[in-house]
Length: 435
Image (tube, rainbow, N blue to C red; front, top):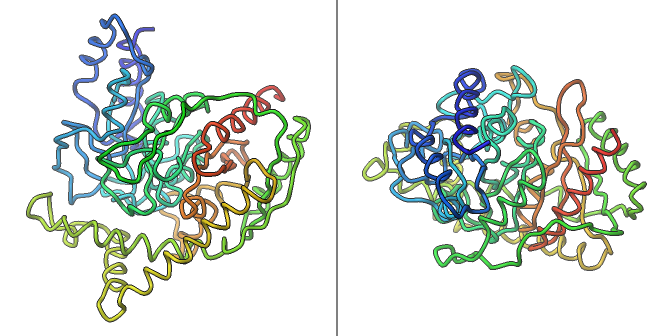
């Protein structure tokens, strides 16, 4: 199938199902024209044949980078983010812009100004956030791959809820130039796909040093190889639903057939992750949103944004006040460093190749179901630590319970994406062979 035929099929799928799922906010009006031009090329790039949806907080020239907010609903991007430049250079075709929690602020996909994203795998339930539309687009068959952003689990939570593969790269592996930031100390752009191979391919294309993002670093080509005999570090955490925990334990027992070793690992300070994360995010988000004053970019954010965005802005404003001298923010950064050092200790001293744990402690819930703020924020409790530690993590589907997908995280040290994805690929291949 040439790319034009594939795009036509995906456009038909979007036309048929997107009104219900609400994953795609805008379709690229030039998608078919771009597909024909790519089909006609003699030398085609590594992403030829791949159709991609992009989260609406990433700039794609000519498309709307709204961040799913009324604040930026009329903002047409005037340039391509670095990741988009790289995708286009390898002949990936961008079919549209994805829904998300407003300004990437949320964990359920319900906070978009343009309505919630429905989980394609569990009708009437949340897709997870904040990269809800990107993940749902992959799960619904609207595209082959997608880009999301992950600040505190925003790729991995929806990937778990919707039963796909979602990668949070190591901090600095992928340029954020062109990302409308939530928290620059934590943000990373990453790939979402139906399988580990596709996720690895897209990550290899978008990674690398960029002079426009000082935190980026270069790395070797991402390759998936047989991992050989390895030792899994099993992290036990509190608050996980008993059904999820039982499925996780069952899978661990099955992996013994691969000849792998296992070791129970305790990570200090992991229980402080949520309390550490929010002061950093709120303070940095407050600072980042000062540009949205209605003069250059859209509307004034305080007059046009939703409740969760305003909660974070006002919280960041309080933390930033002169009388506090930034001590809550700086204290959170100090604890972040402790968590980072603890992960480094585990990977260097505990004799494990990776850490594994459930991706989320709960199942996707019904859209509109009331949650306390504590319950809502606790959804991210297992994914935030990897962001604070700056390491790489991937969520894999490991099965369904009561027709709801369950995900498992594989976490490796900073810059060890090839190792992480090789282990993840072996796990998914073993699962297929065991069916």
